[in-house]
Image 1 (tube, rainbow, N blue to C red):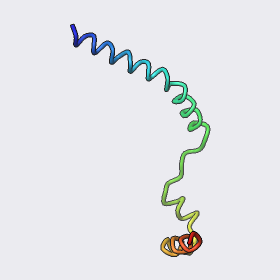
Image 2 (spheres, rainbow, N blue to C red; image 1 turned 45 degrees about the horizontal axis):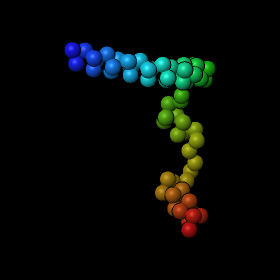
Image 3 (cartoon, one colour; image 1 turned 45 degrees about the vertical axis):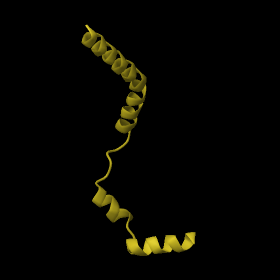
Image 4 (cartoon, rainbow, N blue to C red; image 1 turned 180 degrees about the horizontal axis):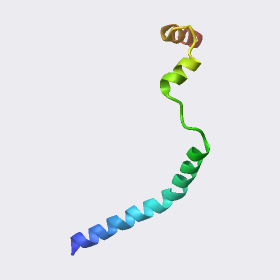
Amino acid sequence: MSDAVDEFELLGRQLSKKSRTAALRERMESFVAEHERPEDLKTLRRRTATDESLAETVRRNRDERV
């Protein structure tokens, strides 16, 4: 009997959690559907890359903080 009660309580908690997150999940899915697919990461890097190396960027930013 205890196992049945435990399983019932577990299912109740899962259902409660699902009902709390359903609205957010629906809004997120709607947002994703309204916006274009994300670009391929390599394409995005090529499009936004500069001639400066990553090491130079890190050094420059580190010098600005010091």
